[in-house]
Structure formats: C-alpha cells, structure tokens
Length: 309
Length: 313
Ligand SMILES: Nc1ncnc2c1ncn2[C@@H]1O[C@H](COP(=O)(O)OP(=O)(O)O)[C@@H](O)[C@H]1O
Ligand SMILES: [Mg+2]
Image (cartoon, rainbow over all chains, first blue to last red; front, side, top):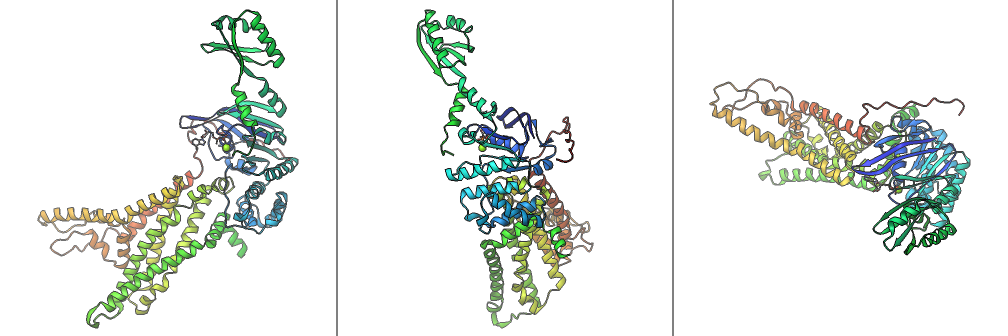
C-alpha cells in the first residue's frame, strides 16, 4: 500500500531524510518512532503530497506522490502534528466543509457525518462550535475529518501527543476500530510504549535514517542487544584489540587513545565471560564498561514515555 | 434549478469563506468604520463650502454637486487602497499560521479553486462595503451634475482596483509565510502604484517640458511618452473617466499655453486597465502555482507508471 524507495529530503544543506526505504502492506498498522527532529513529520508530509522529496520515490496505492498527487490525496487521510480548526464553524459544518472539499454530495454527507461523529464519540457535540471543544475532542474531530472520503490509508502524525491519559485511551480505541475496518495506518510518535501495543510493525528513525524496522517484538530485542563495551587498559589497547576480534558475539573492534570500543551482541552472562577471558590473557584492565550505542540512545529516548511534548 | 446553480458556482471553499466572514464581528465593524470615514469626508466637504463660503454666494448647485462627487470618488479610492491589502494579504498566510492550510491542501480542491475562491470572497466583501457607501452619495444624486453612466464607470473602476490589489495581496500571502510580512509588502507595492507613478510622472513631465521650451518650441507641439506614466496611476485613470479630454492634455506638451489638437494615443483609464490586467493574471498565476510545492527538474526524469486498477477492489 505504501512503498518508499531511497527517499531523501534536504532543507538547504541540512539532510532531514537520508535514503529511507519502507514498505507497508495493506491493512497494517505501522508505528513510526524516533526522537523529536528525527524526520517523521517530514516523511509523512511527503506522503501527504505537502512536501517534495529531494530524491527517491514514494508511492501510495501504487501512485507516486509527486507524479499523481491528486490520486494520492483521494486515498489518504492526513492528520498533521500541529493543526488548527476553523473556530467559527460548528462540528457538523466543519465536517461538511471537508466532505464537500472531497467532492462528496450533500445527501451523502448528511448520512455520513452522524456516523463519523458517532465513531469518534462526538455525537453530543454535533452543533457545538469547534473552538468550544477540548483538545482531545478537536483531535478526534480531526480524525473524523480524515475519514470523510473513506481513504484506504491514514497518515496520523503524533495523534496522541498533548493528550491526557484518558483522551489517549479513547484515541487508541478508535484506532483499533479503524484497524478492524481494514485501513492501512501509519502513525508516528516519539514515545515507543505509546505505540507498542497497538501497532503491527514499527520503524525506528533517527537523524533522518531508518535504523530498525520490523515486527514490534523483534525490534525491541534488537534495540536491546546491541551494545558497545568500552575497555581501558594500561597501554595494551592494540594487542587487546587484535585478540578480541576472534571472540564470539564481537561484531567489530575499534581502538583509539581513549581505549578499545567493542560492538558486542552477547547477553550479560556472555559479557561476564568475555571479561574473564580478557583478564586471563594477562592484560591490565583499568575499566570494563558498557557504553550506550547510538541505537540504545534512541531506544532509551523513545521508551522514556511520559507526557513531555 | 436553483440548487444546481448554487452547487455549480458556490464551491466548498467559497461557501466556507462567506460563512466565516459573515460570522466575524470584525467584518461588520469594518463596514461601519468604512462608511463612517467616507461620511466624514462628505460632511467636511459640505461644511467647507456651505459655511466657510462667505456671503452666502456658495449655493449647492449641480457643478458643486459634481465637485463633491469627484472629492468623494478620490476619498473612496484612497480608502480602497488602505482596505484591500489588509483584507486580502492574509487569506492564505493566515490559514498557514492557524495551521489549517495543510489540511485544505490535501483535499481534492484544485490550487486554482482555492486561490480564486479566496479572491472572489474578499472581492465580494469589499464590493459590499463600497456599495454600503452609496447613501453617502445621496446628496450628489439630489443635486445632479453627474450621469448614471459616470457613476457606474467609477464603481467598475473601483472593482478593478480592488481586483488588482486583491490579486497582489493573495500573491504575497502565498509567497510569504507570515501575514504581517505579506500585508507590508502589499502596502509597499500599493504605494508604488498609487504614489510613485504619480511622482514619476510629474518628475519626467518637468524635464521633458523644460527641454521642449528650451528648444525654442519651434517644432509644432507633439505628444510625449511621459503621459503613459500617468496611465499607471489610479488617480490619473480616475480623472480620465470624469473628464474625457484629460488624457489628451496629459499626453501633449504645452507651447505658449496652447496644446495640440491631436487625440491622445490612449485613454489613461484604458491603459490602466490593460497594463494591470496583465499584472493581475501574472500575480494569480504565480499564486496558484506556488500554493502547493512546485515540482522542479522534471527534465531527465520519467514519470512513474500509473498502477493498473484492479477490478472489484
Ligand atoms: N521547513 C523546514 N526547514 C528547515 N528544516 C526543517 C523544516 N522542517 C523540518 N526541518 C528539520 O528537519 C528535521 C526533521 O524534522 P521533522 O520531520 O519535523 O522531525 P520529527 O517529526 O521526527 O520530530 C528537524 O531537524 C527539523 O528541524
Ligand atoms: Mg513531528
């Protein structure tokens, strides 16, 4: 349903996206995670035909976004990370406006809008002015707006951000329903737990690069196991580096004047075994310490959770 | 029938613009202030001529009524110059600032529909405001001195000036992220059109006229290119609507108080309409192209294939 190939986006000389590739099957709920500034919104606005990629292609339902923007717009419902509403419209008028903008005839809209309001639990606010709604309600109204033209794909940029826990749960329930309706959903967040239980797959992005992608459980494992061990010795860095290269679970070894950096994928027991091994070689170890890899930084950051914006 | 008509002409963007405009208390306030401003000009005029004119000589006759019409028409032109940028330079950028633009741009509405609907909606509102000033003209109608044709021409001319400033306003509203910048730039361009063209005309007319006198004026009086500059000025164009001989005088150089008899190469208002029609078309064309991201470098890159639509999806 969504097919991204080698997508790059530059703002001047700054590379916001570096060669991203991504496939999302029809009916999948895809969680797009990464810290603030990673490039999630940039990717999503390219998919929504609102920004042009510097290079690469992105297809929605087979239509390339820059070649057939009109076709793509028909197929997507897009919710931006920050959005406003027309305050002086009532909730139903608001949905009528967008419905009409998608070319839906009025009689159809008259039937559709109550259903949409019901879906997002806003039936009792149908005649309220939009500016009288709470933030969570506006968010849900905006979600209803994404659905007026019954798109196959929903692109939701941080739909849960800034919501209190209760509103978050409501949003989650609605998304479950949409999943049951067979929509392909791509939803972003800078907090992993917020997504983990409602998505089928996740992609982790940082500094414009896709660093991990796949089933939620797989990613969580991969994010956990990769680590860097930093070893300092009394001037024996080079011979230690030589020896370490042949050890199991060691993927690469770097040595510099601060010590030896070992990229290691063994678990804790294997790691303690490694330390015993190093000492048995008679190397004077000053410190043996787990450092955080880039991936772990990301993992820590996106698993922190909490209400920070 | 009626339903079909409105469905065809009132697109969703236009419908929304009208609704929001009419619901905003600011709109009604601006109509009121505008009419009051023009009313104040009318009162000041009447006061000056009826009370300050000594010895009761000054009677309000058709010629006085015509003068009043001219004064009101110029005042109205100035008011439009102040109003139009403020009303149009925010129409796109304010949606961007309120973060509603991206959602509008992902609908099926074409860029042209969005831009032109916003233009038509603000033009309609400005027309409403200008028509609301008609009662101020009642004293002119009472004493006569102007023909209905002149009145209609002047109002059509206003419509054109509003279209011009409106198109520029929407262009800058599309190009600049911030409304305040768009408004300032629109006023800047308005200042060039309203003032700088007039000053340039006076400046060049001075030079050309002097050279002509210095040359001894032996050659018969000729038309000068300098007149074209005044045709770019709304004030010049407006006078040429009042006084059909005005264009001729503007184009000819004076020799010893007499001007030539040849016709003006073009009526100033006609030049104004022709030149600025081009400006309007270009401004709107750029605005329509730039409201969504522009695809560049299509050369050397093949359009990707359309997918084969599968039946029964
Ligand atoms: N219009 C822009 N001009 C310049 N830089 C931008 C623009 N939009 C985004 N960026 C930069 O691109 C990076 C990615 O931004 P974004 O996609 O919004 O990240 P995310 O949504 O993951 O938080 C950020 O560093 C941001 O500062
Ligand atoms: Mg973002």
